[in-house]
Length: 98
Image 1 (tube, rainbow, N blue to C red):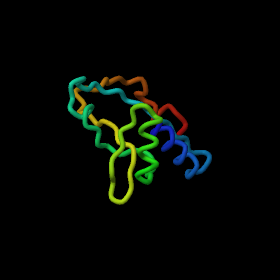
Image 2: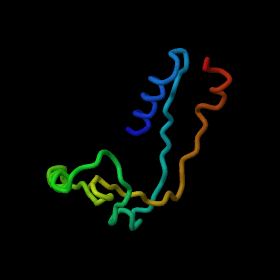
Image 3: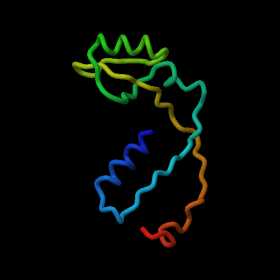
Image 4: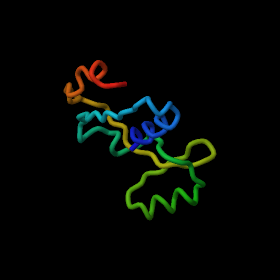
């Protein structure tokens, strides 16, 4: 989702003849990584404490944490063990029109 939003904003900011593409990369993480039990990576908008508590309840599983004077959703950020390397786009920069 973040990659898509970044792609959209870049496409909106660049001249129409420039093309933008998102490449999603998968990584392998350990199921026993402690990050899953203690999420710390903030994502999304910020909320008041009351809003964050309400969202944590109705979302069925959101973790929220204080960030300065506000609160926000936090997610796990486990350490990657491996990434799947592939090269389906080898040569794109020379064969594609951008």
